[in-house]
Image (cartoon, rainbow, N blue to C red; front, side, top):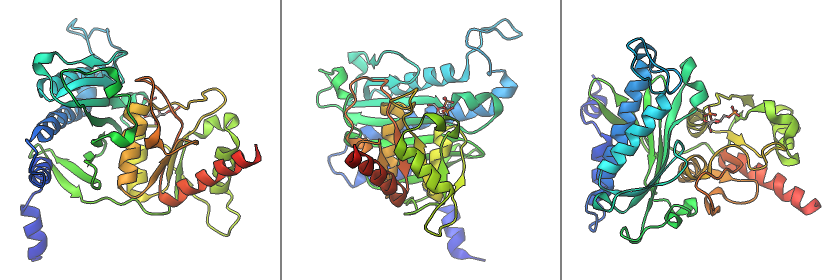
Length: 341
Ligand code: FDP
């Protein structure tokens, strides 16, 4: 019997225990972040359960449709948004919420306000819901200076100012990946315990990767550096093997694979969408934060992604993120183009 492995199996590091351990290292900490996170975790568990039951519960469908009982059905992304908004407000630790689902930011009632702003996409990859492909929730957390005097500027901050970021992937297992600014850790939901258990401690992305991930259907409208990079992935001139293409079309799943196996995920600008597709606050920033924390890089085609200063809450940006060396190549191609301009 492997006693060491056995001891490991019986000494479970839950996400709450992990965050409490982290908290105890900061004497000034009063446990507010732990409380906030436990509400985010609750939202993730609820959405995970709803996603798993979606087919059975007839949750899939258009918002506003009615089911056989004549009750109005809620589409999964609408339901997920409601769950997260309510969980975050009731934590008593938030003051501004920005959700992909809501056009305007939500300012929490002063009586329930706390010091955190949470930006989130409650159910990312929604075009994959109906066919059972992995989807996820993405979130980022900022802290405000004065919770009694908050303005939208508190969330229009560069991603490097985020305090924490993460995602939860609803796939073959339910995995929550989190960074509080000192590395990246992955937790898997044990459905029998209802707890997220640390299964991927201190995730580091491989420095180089063999996979590229992009919607190649947009290739005809790409700019020069993106076209050159993808061409090199397929027809390398330096004796390397060609890279494999993997594209799920669900950012959480594509980024999760990139984080674990290495490689690059790109959603570049193109002639039709000069700002790309993905949203800065709740897609680009949290994923870029995690990539950097895992030793990778994230680049917009112009600058380090986390240095970008958003001016609108639903702003989009092109993004190239993943293994350090792969992003370095993209940066060199953009720099070369600039020099010839
Ligand atoms: P979706 O449209 O299915 O919601 O931003 C949303 C997103 O999915 C990402 O999760 C995904 O990476 C991307 O869009 C996929 O876009 P394309 O269908 O244009 O490839």
